[in-house]
Each structure stands twice: as structure tokens, then as C-alpha cells.
Image (cartoon, rainbow over all chains, first blue to last red; front, side):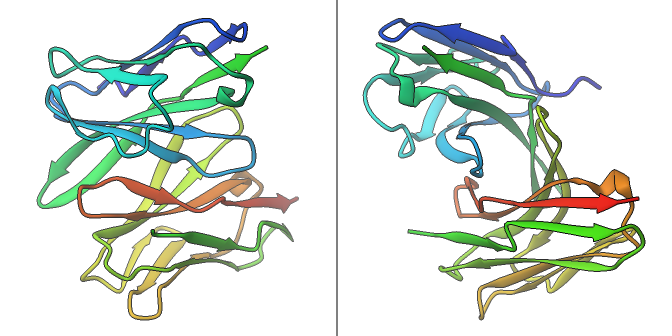
Amino acid sequence: GAGVSQTPSNKVTEKGKYVELRCDPISGHTALYWYRQSLGQGPEFLIYFQGTGAADDSGLPNDRFFAVRPEGSVSTLKIQRTERGDSAVYLCASRQTSGGIDTQYFGPGTRLTVL
Amino acid sequence: KQEVTQIPAALSVPEGENLVLNCSFTDSAIYNLQWFRQDPGKGLTSLLLIQSSQREQTSGRLNASLDKSSGRSTLYIAASQPGDSATYLCAVGEYGNKLVFGAGTILRVKS
């Protein structure tokens, strides 16, 4: 079946602009995660949704970052007043629980470049 | 705060060699530990997942071990091939299921 998809694959914007990044999880996965990966680093947790609600947003770096998942499927990560330091690959993952084993499936990511 | 460290940062080996990648973590109260592979410009592919109650998992030429008490995991790759060249990431699963990643080991297998 289809995996996790993310759009756009690349986004170039100017400092101060607003951007939205979209994640389509695997159908039926109730949990959804956003991570951010800077060059040469591992991904860092941003926010976790269980259904429509944000169960843990402790990784969001500041109030310029916000994410929604209004119908419990597609999620949008929103970044206001972008800064050059926001440049990174933003990864989305959705989670399946099968037989008590939790597995996160990752999308290909959106590469955000802030000029 | 959980911290995950991977050693070495980069590794280059000739084809056919067996190799070991190391991962250490600071807080032993983990839910699981997962090894991922990441190819340039691509997302993450899960290789092996070890539950906190398990000691090891095997898949084909890959074997991952977990020692919670010492905060260590190793990924063993047997008979390495050029197609194994990628970045390997270790991630600790915390309760609530968010993953804390190491910075990765960049592996190059030379033919």
C-alpha cells in the first residue's frame, strides 16, 4: 500500500515568509509525528498527534511553529516569519501498532531552504 | 534529557568485511530501540526494532543487540556489500513513542 507522503518535496522561501508543509500518513495510522533534521544531524522530535489532538508538542522550538491535524489524518506544519535557521529537512512519520510492537514509518521529507 | 551518541561518525570498509556500529544512550528508561537506514535525499527505512524487554533482533545479514543497563546497542552487519552504503541512525523510543536519534554513522563499503 501507499507509504507516508509529504509535499512539497522542496520549498525555497525568503526570510520572514510563512510556509506550510503537508504530511499524508498511511491510511488507518492514528499516530503522526513531525521531526526536523539539520545537515549532519539525526532527526529531532517536534510534535506528536494521537488522532486530532497534539499529545506532545514539547519539541516545537518556539511559537513560530504550529501544526494541525483537524480530521485525524493529514497534518500541516506551519512556520511563521521563517528564519535562515529554520532551513532543514522536515520529516513526518505515522505509527502502526501491531502485536504490541510500535513501528514508525517515515515519509521522504520536505527540504526547506530559507534564503 | 535523553542523549544518543553514535560511534564512529563515519566508516569506510572493503566489500565483504563484517562491521559493528555502536550506539549509546544516557537514560535506560526506554520503550524500544530502533536502527534506521537513510540514503541521500531519502527518508528513513526501519531495519530492526528491539523492544526494551529483548536483547537482540536479527534480519538477514543484520543483527542488533540491546543492553539497557549499560545504555548500549550495536548493529552488526555481516559480509558488507556496496549497497549497504548509507547513513545508519540509532533511535531510542521513549514512552509516548517519540524517538530520540543519534547523529548517525556514515558507512561506505568499497567494491
